Image: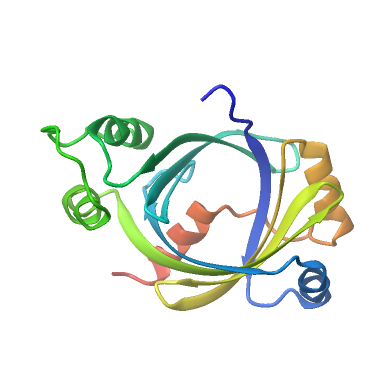
Length: 195
């Protein structure tokens, strides 16, 4: 995985971002829709999601003086999920893996037999309508989301250069908002919506 470049990220969640939102939608290159499943652990530094039959796992590496977060992809594995990929995921979650008898897991089997049997893991369905653009070299995105059917909105700025990310966040007038990653937002959602 040495060829993968980690990216610095800034993100916030809310219901209305006013003029900032209008500007980002106007500069968007178009809308992209997706349905995903996030696997939320107790650790906010591990971001795990399933999208398009792929398990995608990132680990938080560093937080800079502006609160920007550096995330490193550590796993991108297609379903059916092989035992070695499951071992990688459990190592990131710092959990003991279940008995691995050599078979592969489909998404339903993974959610039921793996995630469903771990008290520290919870799956949440997330839909996304994303509007992305490039501003000052940074990927900037506003998205209309649902967390298990509950609507929420997010804005994100990402790039390999943290100074460029912070410059763009500040230039867009977003620096007054808290930087909240997906895992923290989903953990807060679970706290309010007890399942």
